Length: 388
Image (cartoon, rainbow, N blue to C red; front, side, top):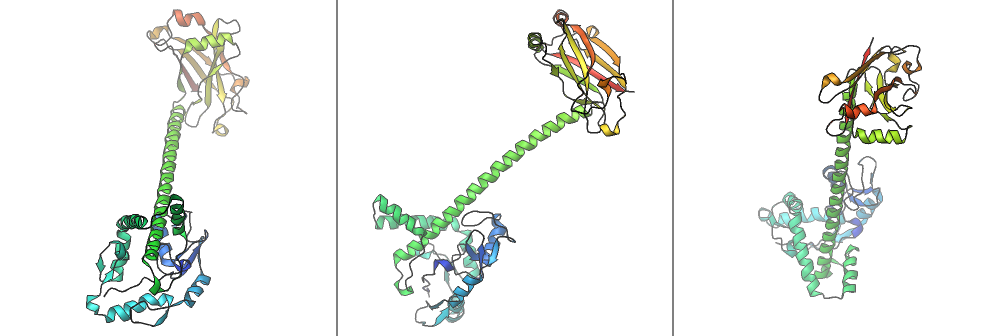
């Protein structure tokens, strides 16, 4: 027959996960108690956060056996809720007593276990406790819907003003009143069910917030990865160019105007290498002191493998101002390094302050008259450095 198990359990002894009396209680660093098996399974499945407040928990550092609560539970007794049975039992032994004595004795072959949410509309019947537990986990959403319907119906039966409604709603978080089993009312039963509903909703909201944060972190990490990859690919191209670098100077007309307005202004290229582990150089342009020429120089930069290279640098350096339409009009100048100059010694800072090149590489007017500008207004300069 249907067994009445609607006895009131002290909230201190109730596991928030299985909603039954704590078995082998464990206490978390954030102050919540759970059955040992429940919290370990929860952490394994739900990613290591507290079911109540969502704080991160480590199985090794944040869980401790709660021996004080274990002793308190061991001292609790209650009368068997089975009709006609007046046996007084330790709290933890009540379920096993009902299962072994009453359910097995009452036609074991026809044993029927009803869903915990039968009183609000779930009419599933089971032949074993394991089936009942599986059903409780599998049908959580359906039970939440039933609880919502029950809550709405109860609210209609107990009409209150807005302020009283808020007060009543907040009371669902309080521990249930301590009544004897035979004085359990319909409202008390609904109160416990609604409290469970609110707790489950809070857990789902916390889980959703946690997933949103994880998604945000993944997006940020992915964006950083893409940025780092682009930087790596750009740097790799400069390292394996074997000393041949094409310097594209966009919007060159405006750059020349700025240089003429401010003779101290200058523009530098990216750093590039003679080989993957070789010398690192950059180029520089500015206006000559007489404002008529474009000056073009080369600078040695500090590289990662300078300790393994020979100093001072020895080699040939070629500058080519590329004509976009007529290659034979391109301007090319070649020079050799000089070991006595400061410009070719090993850099002690990010870049040698001394450069080497041409202070009068080409007349500014020739850039326009000889049509060295690309269609987009840029200019291309090829720099070739060969070690000898």
